[in-house]
Amino acid sequence: MTSRSLFFLILMILFSCEKDDICLEGTSATPRMIVLFKDHENPQIKKGVTKLLIRGLGLIDSLTIFSGDSISIPLRNNYEFTQYEFTLSTTSPTLSDSLQINHRQFDTYINRACGYKSTFIFEKNFYYELTQSEGWIKNIEKISDTLYDEKSSHLSIYH
Image 1 (cartoon, rainbow, N blue to C red):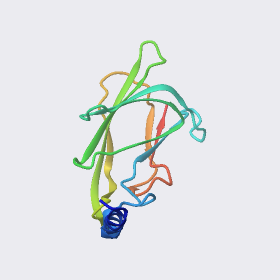
Image 2 (cartoon, rainbow, N blue to C red):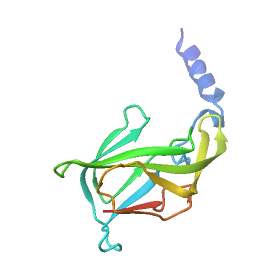
Image 3 (cartoon, one colour):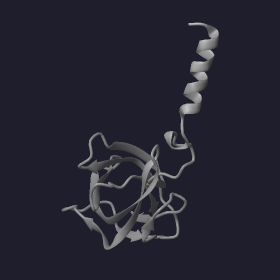
């Protein structure tokens, strides 16, 4: 193959791509839920957690170890609820709380390369505690009814 043929082959490949064949960086995707951790005795103050194990129930390979005062976690877009187990591994014995977040989902088509973007609407009774015993979460507050971006917080967990 001559260099001229190779040049025309590369040129044909470059010009055969259409705008919808590439999902550009910065294209909005399905947002994750932003969770804040706050002090239950002084609700205005953020209170970080250390070595929090977060496991999505019903999700494969969904264990996260987290330290900090806020985290973004995904919601399931193939069900009307998402369940998570939050375990404080720094306490003895370890304390766990399991929550179910209830939501509706609306999909918006972006393009062929990016697919769909989901927007979530939290239900009136937006969460349900699955924990049967004493856990570490004292209260939960919904900050926003709609999850359409990651620019603001959606849920506060008081501990």
